[in-house]
Amino acid sequence: MTRAGAAFLGSHSAVVGVISALSPGPGAVFAGVAALVVTAASSSVGSWCTSACPRFQAPGSFCSASFLGADWSYALELNLTDSANATCLYAKWQMNFTITYETTNKTYRTVNISDLSTVRHEGSTCGDDQNGPRIVIHFGSGFSWIVNFTKNAPDYLIDTISFSYNTNDHTIFPDAEHKGNITIDKRVALKIPLNDIFRCKSLLTIEKNNVTQHFWNVLVQAFVQSGTVSTKEYLCDEDKHSTTVAPIIHTTVPSPTTTPTPTEKPKVGTYSVSNGSNTCLLATMGLQLNVTQDKVSSIININPNTTGVTGSCHPQTAQLRLNSSIIKYLDFVFAVKNENRFYLKEVNVSMNLVNGSVFSIANNNLSYWDAPLGSSYMCNKEQTVSVSGTFQINTFDLRVQPFNVMEGKYSTAQECSLDDDTILIPIIVGAGLSGLIIVIVIAYLIGRRKSYAGYQTL
Image (cartoon, rainbow, N blue to C red; front, side, top):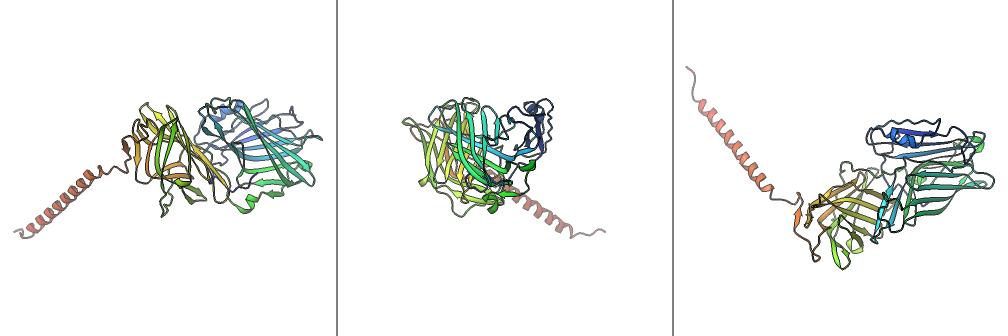
């Protein structure tokens, strides 16, 4: 596990719903009972439990759920017992994944996997004389995650972590160039004293072969002694130096938050994407990234002179991808709506923060920069794109045209309302006339009172 601080700040993972599946007797793979608990928080009240629980239930198991506000987040808990019904391995954690894959158009696309509502634990085992304990998690369509433990007295190791996914899933990887099962193996070799429980509330990150795995709120003990989980904690380095904990799960955008504006505006860069020999996407803008950590905002200005540009153009979608020494990718994805307009639909970002942590977030439910097809969108004033509660993008001197670029030049621009000063003229004139009328009325009333003061009643 790489050293990382809290790359995602804030948390919507309050425990407000519980879904439990209990195997009623000895498991098929290991002798004993496995209990898998998925804890979730939802943004709305609904019949999620009744639709999700049958995927968990077995004879003798049960399911219950209750919901209060907040976003979806899942906490996994696994308790393995041996043939004597004594706990041999205990683990509780939260996780999500980011996968970057090559498309049929030779571009790259990123997907985020955080829905763990269909988790199964088949294959998890207490171990034996030849093999150590193992956690095996299956979820979604073709996803699996395996952790192997080994003993090396006086310690035990979180030895290897394997993550598998299947790009044949057209829903998640609709345009994948390479189809099939892909497995990422990572040697971790994290050493923990025997009879200690490992704890790490902070974010832990593993990156390999275009897959980023995030873990937080981790509690794990393998080789549990005498069936009792230890109360003696072995802390990760991140918890020793940081109080920040869990990440935000990718979700719909909350209300924009206010971030301080630095004294220095970002440099304006011009970016373009070509389809063959023809320019198919144009963008000119100054970009300022705002990351909120513990209610403190960090601001990063993008330097266009040190920023790389890639992307892709299709009839219904277009992508602009920026990258630099600190930004792995910053994607702006545009889409066509109603066959006659375009808009900014999606933003994905992954970057390294100054504290050494990795910040990754995505939102594919945006609605910004709306303009007719065949035109460009322009906004010279500062504008904010709110991607999440902890990540916003401020743009300056913006002009974009992701479709129907002719001869490498912008078409006529539709200006944003912030730039449209023409509407201010009638407002100013109307306000002036209203003020003048009020002054005349007041003067008239004062004059009438003075004229009446000269007469007395007989």
